[in-house]
Image (cartoon, rainbow, N blue to C red):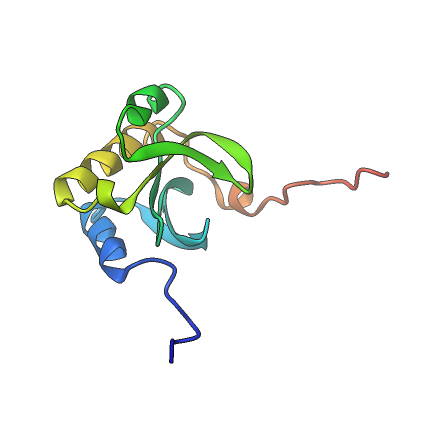
Length: 130
């Protein structure tokens, strides 16, 4: 009988990402169907059963999409510019995973840190019918 609770991503992938990001101001949060890693409050990447989603930024997106294991991310059917999805075969080797994580770090490290207020701010401050 299968376990009713299946992990959202292989633990070894999470551990590989954690070991690469050691020493950086990174936090973790369940989002995007897996474990997301945030740098200074900004999404850096997400590990899931489907592989890794990396935030490379709009400028690096064409270069990232040139890789055969990468594709553009769609969140809930909507395009997510600057986010790339990498299939598990594209991150099996540690150097391949490191390359994607470094590309994400190169972009996300340029973003301003999110303050606690910004992180918890409601998406919509007023009802539309008011």
